[in-house]
Amino acid sequence: MAAPGSPAVPVVLASASVARRRMLHQAGLTLVADPADIDEESLKVEAARQGKTPVAIALALAEAKAVAVSLRHPDALVIGADQVLVCGGRLLSKAADRQQAAATLERLRGRSHRLVSAVALVRDGRISWRHVDTARLRMRAFSKSFLQSYLAAEGKAVIQTVGAYALEGRGAQLFDRVDGDHFTVLGLPLLPLLAQLRREGVIAT
Image (cartoon, rainbow, N blue to C red; front, side, top):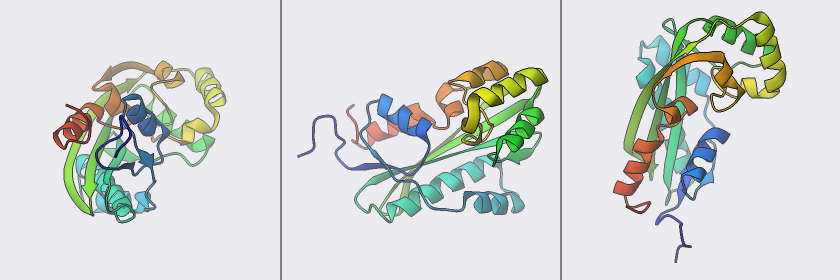
């Protein structure tokens, strides 16, 4: 018999994202994290070469993660999620180091960009549900001295997110406007996902 508060079926998060895992745990969901071992950057580059939209790319990445991990957990419901950042019609990737993070923030400074967050549910290798949502953010025209102090304070955290910021922390100081769902900005359309988990009987209605 499942422990009190445990889902009727095992739930696995196919992501290494601390933010996504924290969101789901704080929402009361019992799960384990098992990151997918896929070449996200190659998939993104190929999809962009084929002319796929940012929405299609985010969904494809989320689905690929969930399907790959589902093969390791045949009896579980696997959550795959991904997020892409679009600025000026161009997809940006995570920075490899502090220098690249600085270049990303300089590109975003004083401009609007979109965060496209997708989530997919997979069981036994089959996609049962998918959802995507978009938020629009405008980064303020911060000074060079602020940029340097921000990078110094954040350290390695700036290479862990696609835009080199975490809105739930010091990254909030980079912005003057955010339009869209807060959870979407953090990388997971949480409320639609919870609604689907209720429909599937995984969490209580």
